[in-house]
Structure formats: C-alpha cells, structure tokens
Image (tube, rainbow, N blue to C red):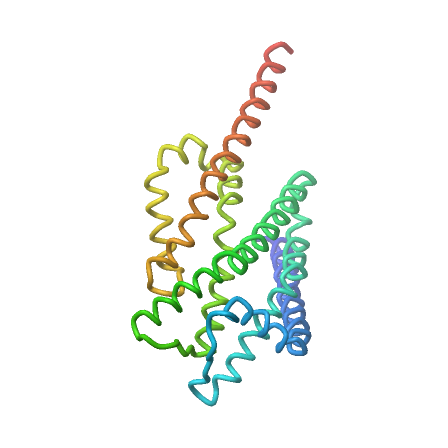
Length: 254
C-alpha cells in the first residue's frame, strides 16, 4: 500500500467519523425536541386503546422513566431519520457516478416512503385490531377487565410500528435484487410457496406477542407486498431485457 493510498483511507475514515458524530448530534437534538412533546406522543400512542383498555398501571417505580425514555428515543429517531440518511448518502456520493447517485437517491426516497407507509398501516389498521382482539381474549380468559402495564403497552406499540416499516421494504428488496441481477421474477414465482412459509416464520419471530392472530395480521400484508414485489421485479426485468436487446441489435448492425 502506497503512502497516497494510506492517506486516502485515513481521510475517508476521518470523514466517516464525522458522519457518525453529526448523526449522533442530529439524534440528540431530535431527542431534545421529542422531549418537549413526549406527553403528546404518549397520548398518540395511547389513542388506539382509548375505547378498549380502561386501566393502565405502572409496575415498577422506574417504569415511568423507562416509558419517557422509549418515547423520546423513538420520537427522536423519527425526526432525525432523514438528516442521518442524508449524511450517509452524501458520504458515498463522491465515489458514485451520476447515474449511480440518482439510483441511490431514488431508491432511498422509495425506502423512506415505504417505511412511513408501513408505520401508518400498522398504527391505523393493525394496532387497533390487535389491541381489541387481545383485550377481548384476556377478558374471556379472566372474566374481568384487563389491566395492562403501560411500559409493556408502549413496547408493544413501538415494536409493532417498527415491524410495519420493515415489512413494507419487501417490494424495494425485490426491486433492488432484480436490478443487481441476483434474482428474477421467475425465481420469485418459482419459490413463492417457500417464501410464504419463510414470511410466516419471520412474522412469528418479529411479532411482539405469542398469539397466532397478531402473526396473521403481519403475514397477510407481507404476502400482498411480496406479490407486489414480483410485479415490480417483472417490470424491471423486462425493461432490462429490452435495453439489452436494443444494445445488441445496435452493435450487430454497426
């Protein structure tokens, strides 16, 4: 390794160090903002359970602090997410060609949109149904109204929202793997049953509760998203094939 190459690597590592430092600063500033709105965020988190769970309780004296910390960190992550993504994209930008930069920016934006869509889907559709079902089930088993640990409820909601955002990345994953020639729509169709089984296992792992119903709430949209991923993969594959044929025909007649 030459002295120039060594100096270049050191320079890149220094730039990366500052990317991490700025990202931490963004997160801390975002958490500070989230701190002032913690009570409002908690009320938003409680909203899906308003007509279902009448009693929350604090199990340990430290739970109140833990609840506020979770809320502030999650709110801070949401606020700082885009600036942090910008920092890392800006870091790799000099090493990319113009079309590669456009590719990264386009699919990063698509990923952010999908993550937000998944979070909203989990909050407005999955969460109310899951809370209602689990509450009714508990009342059936105990023949009394259910009292819920507020710390456990906060963890349940935040994990559900995070999983919703991750699940909605399936079409993006299919698209990127097709662009990189790692998979094709034919492979996605051929192993559809195996993928459905894998999605069920994945849902069982990430579902915050152990009941089958909550897992099913995740599996259904995952299957729909996988089918959407096949459609997107098919469009990309046909476009790439058409471009390759045009390039081949152009070279053939030159």
